Amino acid sequence: MIREGALVLADGSIFEGELIGAERPVATGEVVFNTVLSGYQEVITDPSYAGQIITFTTPHIGNYGVNAADFESRGTFCRGIVVRELARRHSNHRADSSLDAMLHEHDVPGIAGIDTRRLTRLLRDTGAMPGAFGSVDEGDLRQAANAEPGTDGIDLVAQVTVGAGYTVTALDPDSTTRIVAVDYGMKRNIAVNLSRYGTVEVVPASTSAAEILARRPNGVFLSNGPGDPAMVPYAVETIGGLLGNVPIFGICLGHQLLGRAIGAGTVKLPFGHHGGNHPVKNLSSGRIEITSQNHNFAVDPDSLAGRATMTHVNLNDGVCEGLQVDGELAFSVQHHPEANPGPHDSHYLFDQFADMMRSAGVAAGSR
Image 1 (spheres, rainbow, N blue to C red):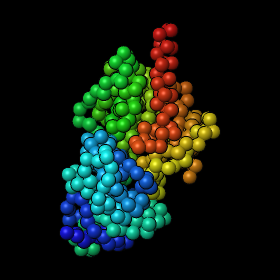
Image 2: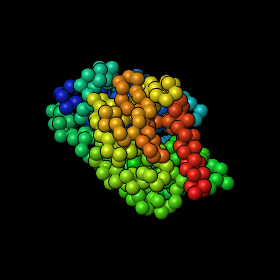
Image 3: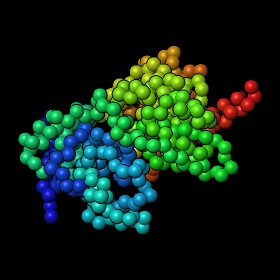
Image 4: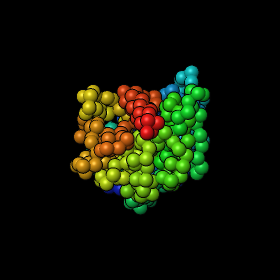
Protein backbone atom coordinates (compact mmCIF):
# COMPACT_ATOMS: atom_id res chain seq x y z
CA MET A 1 0.00 0.00 0.00
CA ILE A 2 1.33 3.45 -0.93
CA ARG A 3 1.88 5.77 2.04
CA GLU A 4 1.78 9.34 0.81
CA GLY A 5 3.92 11.90 2.58
CA ALA A 6 5.94 15.06 2.16
CA LEU A 7 9.33 16.53 3.03
CA VAL A 8 9.35 20.13 4.25
CA LEU A 9 12.53 22.14 4.83
CA ALA A 10 12.99 24.92 7.36
CA ASP A 11 12.87 27.50 4.54
CA GLY A 12 9.36 26.32 3.62
CA SER A 13 10.31 24.25 0.55
CA ILE A 14 7.94 21.31 0.03
CA PHE A 15 8.60 17.99 -1.73
CA GLU A 16 5.83 15.40 -2.11
CA GLY A 17 6.60 11.69 -2.14
CA GLU A 18 5.90 8.18 -0.90
CA LEU A 19 6.93 7.07 2.58
CA ILE A 20 9.19 4.01 2.85
CA GLY A 21 10.94 2.20 5.66
CA ALA A 22 9.92 2.49 9.29
CA GLU A 23 6.49 3.99 9.87
CA ARG A 24 6.66 7.25 11.78
CA PRO A 25 4.31 10.27 11.64
CA VAL A 26 7.22 12.74 11.61
CA ALA A 27 10.99 12.36 11.18
CA THR A 28 13.27 15.37 11.64
CA GLY A 29 16.97 16.08 11.16
CA GLU A 30 19.54 18.13 9.29
CA VAL A 31 19.10 17.39 5.58
CA VAL A 32 22.33 16.71 3.64
CA PHE A 33 23.10 15.08 0.30
CA ASN A 34 25.50 12.26 -0.58
CA THR A 35 26.80 11.66 -4.12
CA VAL A 36 27.92 8.00 -3.89
CA LEU A 37 26.90 5.72 -6.74
CA SER A 38 27.06 2.60 -4.54
CA GLY A 39 27.62 1.78 -0.88
CA TYR A 40 24.24 3.04 0.35
CA GLN A 41 24.19 0.43 3.14
CA GLU A 42 27.58 1.58 4.40
CA VAL A 43 26.40 5.20 4.33
CA ILE A 44 23.19 4.51 6.26
CA THR A 45 25.07 2.54 8.93
CA ASP A 46 27.85 5.13 9.33
CA PRO A 47 27.53 6.68 12.85
CA SER A 48 28.83 9.98 11.44
CA TYR A 49 25.31 10.60 10.11
CA ALA A 50 23.79 10.92 13.59
CA GLY A 51 21.25 13.74 13.59
CA GLN A 52 21.01 13.90 9.79
CA ILE A 53 18.58 12.96 7.02
CA ILE A 54 20.54 11.58 4.05
CA THR A 55 19.54 12.53 0.51
CA PHE A 56 21.01 10.18 -2.11
CA THR A 57 21.67 11.99 -5.37
CA THR A 58 21.91 8.70 -7.31
CA PRO A 59 18.36 8.24 -8.64
CA HIS A 60 18.03 4.46 -8.18
CA ILE A 61 18.82 3.10 -4.70
CA GLY A 62 18.61 -0.46 -3.34
CA ASN A 63 19.18 -2.42 -6.55
CA TYR A 64 21.72 -4.85 -5.03
CA GLY A 65 20.05 -5.25 -1.64
CA VAL A 66 21.85 -5.42 1.71
CA ASN A 67 23.79 -7.96 3.75
CA ALA A 68 25.04 -8.37 7.32
CA ALA A 69 28.73 -8.21 6.33
CA ASP A 70 28.55 -4.63 5.02
CA PHE A 71 27.22 -2.95 8.17
CA GLU A 72 29.65 -0.25 9.31
CA SER A 73 28.39 -0.15 12.90
CA ARG A 74 26.18 -1.94 15.41
CA GLY A 75 23.08 -0.32 13.91
CA THR A 76 21.91 2.95 12.38
CA PHE A 77 22.11 6.50 13.73
CA CYS A 78 20.79 8.66 10.87
CA ARG A 79 17.33 10.22 11.18
CA GLY A 80 16.10 9.02 7.78
CA ILE A 81 16.80 8.80 4.05
CA VAL A 82 15.49 10.56 0.94
CA VAL A 83 15.64 8.88 -2.49
CA ARG A 84 14.32 9.41 -6.01
CA GLU A 85 13.41 5.77 -6.60
CA LEU A 86 13.70 2.77 -4.29
CA ALA A 87 14.33 -0.50 -6.11
CA ARG A 88 11.33 -2.77 -5.70
CA ARG A 89 13.46 -5.79 -6.47
CA HIS A 90 17.11 -6.40 -5.58
CA SER A 91 19.53 -8.72 -7.37
CA ASN A 92 22.95 -9.68 -6.01
CA HIS A 93 24.44 -13.00 -4.92
CA ARG A 94 25.64 -11.41 -1.64
CA ALA A 95 22.26 -9.95 -0.68
CA ASP A 96 20.48 -11.19 2.45
CA SER A 97 17.53 -8.83 2.19
CA SER A 98 16.18 -5.66 0.61
CA LEU A 99 17.02 -2.10 1.58
CA ASP A 100 13.39 -1.42 2.52
CA ALA A 101 13.39 -4.44 4.84
CA MET A 102 16.58 -3.16 6.49
CA LEU A 103 14.98 0.25 7.03
CA HIS A 104 12.01 -1.40 8.74
CA GLU A 105 14.19 -3.69 10.85
CA HIS A 106 16.44 -0.87 12.09
CA ASP A 107 13.66 1.71 12.54
CA VAL A 108 14.88 4.09 9.82
CA PRO A 109 12.12 6.09 8.10
CA GLY A 110 12.45 7.25 4.51
CA ILE A 111 10.70 8.99 1.68
CA ALA A 112 10.90 8.14 -2.04
CA GLY A 113 9.65 9.76 -5.22
CA ILE A 114 11.41 13.02 -4.33
CA ASP A 115 12.93 15.26 -6.99
CA THR A 116 16.42 14.82 -5.51
CA ARG A 117 17.98 16.98 -8.24
CA ARG A 118 15.92 19.96 -7.14
CA LEU A 119 16.56 19.18 -3.47
CA THR A 120 20.32 18.81 -3.98
CA ARG A 121 20.56 22.09 -5.91
CA LEU A 122 18.66 23.81 -3.12
CA LEU A 123 20.96 22.43 -0.42
CA ARG A 124 24.02 23.29 -2.51
CA ASP A 125 22.88 26.89 -2.87
CA THR A 126 21.53 27.52 0.63
CA GLY A 127 23.44 24.97 2.73
CA ALA A 128 22.36 22.00 4.81
CA MET A 129 19.23 22.85 6.77
CA PRO A 130 16.74 21.25 9.14
CA GLY A 131 13.85 19.38 7.61
CA ALA A 132 10.96 17.08 8.48
CA PHE A 133 9.06 14.41 6.55
CA GLY A 134 6.12 12.19 7.32
CA SER A 135 2.41 11.62 6.90
CA VAL A 136 1.08 14.61 8.88
CA ASP A 137 -0.06 17.78 7.14
CA GLU A 138 2.44 20.23 5.70
CA GLY A 139 1.86 22.82 8.41
CA ASP A 140 2.86 20.36 11.12
CA LEU A 141 5.91 19.30 9.09
CA ARG A 142 6.98 22.93 8.69
CA GLN A 143 6.62 23.45 12.43
CA ALA A 144 8.68 20.31 13.12
CA ALA A 145 11.39 21.42 10.68
CA ASN A 146 11.65 24.84 12.33
CA ALA A 147 11.94 23.19 15.76
CA GLU A 148 14.77 20.86 14.65
CA PRO A 149 18.12 22.17 16.03
CA GLY A 150 20.35 20.49 13.43
CA THR A 151 23.85 19.39 14.40
CA ASP A 152 25.33 22.66 15.66
CA GLY A 153 26.08 22.94 19.36
CA ILE A 154 25.23 19.31 20.21
CA ASP A 155 27.51 16.53 21.49
CA LEU A 156 26.51 13.79 19.05
CA VAL A 157 29.59 11.71 19.89
CA ALA A 158 28.07 10.79 23.26
CA GLN A 159 25.11 9.28 21.37
CA VAL A 160 27.15 6.98 19.13
CA THR A 161 30.31 5.94 21.00
CA VAL A 162 30.52 2.44 22.47
CA GLY A 163 29.41 2.00 26.07
CA ALA A 164 32.26 -0.39 26.83
CA GLY A 165 35.53 -1.17 25.10
CA TYR A 166 36.27 -4.25 23.05
CA THR A 167 39.25 -5.84 21.31
CA VAL A 168 39.82 -6.79 17.67
CA THR A 169 42.53 -9.44 17.39
CA ALA A 170 45.49 -8.84 15.09
CA LEU A 171 45.34 -10.69 11.79
CA ASP A 172 48.95 -11.74 12.38
CA PRO A 173 48.93 -13.99 15.48
CA ASP A 174 52.62 -13.20 16.09
CA SER A 175 52.11 -9.43 16.17
CA THR A 176 52.95 -7.67 19.44
CA THR A 177 51.75 -4.24 18.26
CA ARG A 178 48.96 -2.71 20.34
CA ILE A 179 46.75 0.06 18.96
CA VAL A 180 44.17 1.93 21.01
CA ALA A 181 41.33 3.26 18.85
CA VAL A 182 39.18 5.97 20.42
CA ASP A 183 35.61 5.51 19.23
CA TYR A 184 33.89 8.81 18.39
CA GLY A 185 31.57 6.90 16.04
CA MET A 186 34.05 4.52 14.44
CA LYS A 187 33.22 2.58 11.31
CA ARG A 188 33.73 -1.18 11.47
CA ASN A 189 36.05 -1.26 8.48
CA ILE A 190 38.54 1.00 10.27
CA ALA A 191 39.12 -1.63 12.97
CA VAL A 192 39.46 -4.26 10.23
CA ASN A 193 42.20 -2.22 8.53
CA LEU A 194 44.02 -1.46 11.78
CA SER A 195 44.04 -5.15 12.74
CA ARG A 196 46.39 -5.76 9.82
CA TYR A 197 49.07 -4.08 11.92
CA GLY A 198 48.28 -5.25 15.44
CA THR A 199 45.70 -5.89 18.13
CA VAL A 200 43.15 -3.08 18.31
CA GLU A 201 41.64 -2.05 21.63
CA VAL A 202 38.57 0.11 20.99
CA VAL A 203 37.71 2.44 23.88
CA PRO A 204 34.82 4.88 24.51
CA ALA A 205 35.21 8.55 23.58
CA SER A 206 35.28 9.56 27.27
CA THR A 207 38.45 7.54 28.00
CA SER A 208 41.18 9.76 29.48
CA ALA A 209 44.74 10.10 28.25
CA ALA A 210 46.03 8.45 31.43
CA GLU A 211 43.77 5.43 30.90
CA ILE A 212 44.89 5.12 27.29
CA LEU A 213 48.60 5.43 28.07
CA ALA A 214 48.21 2.88 30.88
CA ARG A 215 47.43 0.32 28.17
CA ARG A 216 50.96 0.95 26.78
CA PRO A 217 49.88 1.26 23.14
CA ASN A 218 52.30 1.52 20.25
CA GLY A 219 49.91 3.99 18.65
CA VAL A 220 46.56 5.71 19.16
CA PHE A 221 43.91 6.07 16.47
CA LEU A 222 41.30 8.87 16.58
CA SER A 223 38.16 7.79 14.75
CA ASN A 224 35.54 9.43 12.62
CA GLY A 225 32.30 10.60 14.20
CA PRO A 226 29.35 12.99 13.91
CA GLY A 227 28.73 16.62 14.65
CA ASP A 228 30.54 19.68 15.91
CA PRO A 229 34.10 19.10 17.25
CA ALA A 230 33.71 22.14 19.52
CA MET A 231 31.10 20.16 21.46
CA VAL A 232 33.56 17.40 22.42
CA PRO A 233 36.00 19.26 24.74
CA TYR A 234 36.76 16.11 26.74
CA ALA A 235 38.17 14.48 23.59
CA VAL A 236 40.34 17.54 22.89
CA GLU A 237 41.69 17.37 26.44
CA THR A 238 42.49 13.67 26.05
CA ILE A 239 44.32 14.21 22.76
CA GLY A 240 46.33 17.02 24.34
CA GLY A 241 47.50 14.55 26.97
CA LEU A 242 48.49 12.01 24.32
CA LEU A 243 50.55 14.35 22.12
CA GLY A 244 54.25 13.76 22.60
CA ASN A 245 53.69 10.45 24.38
CA VAL A 246 52.52 8.13 21.58
CA PRO A 247 52.14 8.16 17.77
CA ILE A 248 48.69 9.43 16.72
CA PHE A 249 46.64 9.00 13.55
CA GLY A 250 43.22 10.65 13.12
CA ILE A 251 40.47 10.41 10.52
CA CYS A 252 37.50 12.75 9.90
CA LEU A 253 36.24 13.98 13.31
CA GLY A 254 39.49 12.66 14.79
CA HIS A 255 41.32 14.99 12.39
CA GLN A 256 39.26 17.97 13.54
CA LEU A 257 39.75 17.09 17.22
CA LEU A 258 43.52 16.77 16.73
CA GLY A 259 43.46 20.22 15.12
CA ARG A 260 41.61 21.71 18.08
CA ALA A 261 44.00 19.96 20.50
CA ILE A 262 46.94 21.89 19.03
CA GLY A 263 45.03 25.18 19.14
CA ALA A 264 43.70 25.31 15.57
CA GLY A 265 40.14 26.35 14.81
CA THR A 266 37.31 24.48 13.11
CA VAL A 267 34.50 25.83 10.91
CA LYS A 268 31.19 24.51 9.63
CA LEU A 269 30.98 24.09 5.85
CA PRO A 270 27.87 25.28 3.97
CA PHE A 271 26.69 21.80 2.96
CA GLY A 272 29.64 19.61 3.92
CA HIS A 273 31.38 16.93 1.93
CA HIS A 274 29.39 13.70 1.51
CA GLY A 275 30.37 11.41 -1.33
CA GLY A 276 32.87 8.98 -2.79
CA ASN A 277 34.52 11.04 -5.51
CA HIS A 278 36.23 14.05 -3.93
CA PRO A 279 39.64 14.90 -5.47
CA VAL A 280 42.30 15.50 -2.83
CA LYS A 281 45.90 16.54 -3.52
CA ASN A 282 48.75 15.16 -1.42
CA LEU A 283 50.89 18.29 -1.10
CA SER A 284 54.05 16.28 -0.47
CA SER A 285 53.89 13.90 -3.43
CA GLY A 286 51.70 16.01 -5.73
CA ARG A 287 49.53 12.93 -6.27
CA ILE A 288 45.77 13.39 -6.75
CA GLU A 289 43.63 10.92 -4.82
CA ILE A 290 39.92 10.23 -5.26
CA THR A 291 38.49 10.00 -1.77
CA SER A 292 35.40 9.17 0.27
CA GLN A 293 34.14 11.99 2.49
CA ASN A 294 31.48 12.52 5.13
CA HIS A 295 31.75 15.65 7.27
CA ASN A 296 30.11 19.01 7.88
CA PHE A 297 32.98 20.65 9.80
CA ALA A 298 36.62 21.23 8.83
CA VAL A 299 39.91 22.49 10.24
CA ASP A 300 40.60 26.14 9.46
CA PRO A 301 43.87 26.06 7.46
CA ASP A 302 44.70 29.67 8.39
CA SER A 303 44.90 28.63 12.05
CA LEU A 304 47.59 25.97 11.49
CA ALA A 305 50.57 28.35 11.25
CA GLY A 306 53.18 27.51 13.87
CA ARG A 307 51.20 24.46 14.96
CA ALA A 308 51.01 22.04 12.02
CA THR A 309 51.66 21.69 8.30
CA MET A 310 48.76 21.09 5.93
CA THR A 311 49.49 17.87 4.02
CA HIS A 312 46.38 17.45 1.85
CA VAL A 313 43.90 19.84 0.23
CA ASN A 314 40.46 19.33 -1.32
CA LEU A 315 40.67 20.41 -4.97
CA ASN A 316 36.97 21.29 -5.13
CA ASP A 317 37.03 24.05 -2.53
CA GLY A 318 40.46 24.24 -0.88
CA VAL A 319 39.37 22.68 2.43
CA CYS A 320 42.17 21.32 4.63
CA GLU A 321 42.19 17.54 4.12
CA GLY A 322 45.23 16.63 6.22
CA LEU A 323 47.77 17.90 8.72
CA GLN A 324 51.06 16.90 10.31
CA VAL A 325 51.62 18.31 13.80
CA ASP A 326 54.92 20.20 13.93
CA GLY A 327 57.58 18.35 15.93
CA GLU A 328 55.29 15.45 16.88
CA LEU A 329 54.48 11.94 15.68
CA ALA A 330 50.90 12.89 14.93
CA PHE A 331 49.02 13.30 11.66
CA SER A 332 45.44 13.18 10.44
CA VAL A 333 43.24 13.39 7.36
CA GLN A 334 39.70 14.60 6.79
CA HIS A 335 38.80 11.92 4.25
CA HIS A 336 38.30 8.16 4.70
CA PRO A 337 41.18 5.91 3.55
CA GLU A 338 39.28 2.86 4.86
CA ALA A 339 36.28 3.55 2.60
CA ASN A 340 34.15 0.53 1.84
CA PRO A 341 33.40 -0.28 -0.99
CA GLY A 342 35.96 2.36 -2.00
CA PRO A 343 37.80 4.28 -3.37
CA HIS A 344 41.11 3.04 -1.97
CA ASP A 345 43.54 5.68 -3.25
CA SER A 346 44.40 6.84 0.29
CA HIS A 347 44.83 3.41 1.84
CA TYR A 348 48.59 4.02 2.13
CA LEU A 349 47.90 6.20 5.17
CA PHE A 350 47.46 3.09 7.31
CA ASP A 351 50.95 1.98 6.23
CA GLN A 352 52.21 5.45 7.11
CA PHE A 353 50.77 5.03 10.61
CA ALA A 354 52.40 1.60 10.91
CA ASP A 355 55.76 3.05 9.85
CA MET A 356 55.37 5.81 12.44
CA MET A 357 54.68 3.29 15.20
CA ARG A 358 57.63 1.18 14.07
CA SER A 359 60.04 4.13 14.03
CA ALA A 360 58.85 5.26 17.45
CA GLY A 361 59.46 1.78 18.80
CA VAL A 362 62.96 1.66 17.34
CA ALA A 363 63.77 5.08 18.80
CA ALA A 364 62.47 4.03 22.23
CA GLY A 365 64.49 0.85 22.12
CA SER A 366 67.69 2.71 21.26
CA ARG A 367 67.48 4.96 24.32
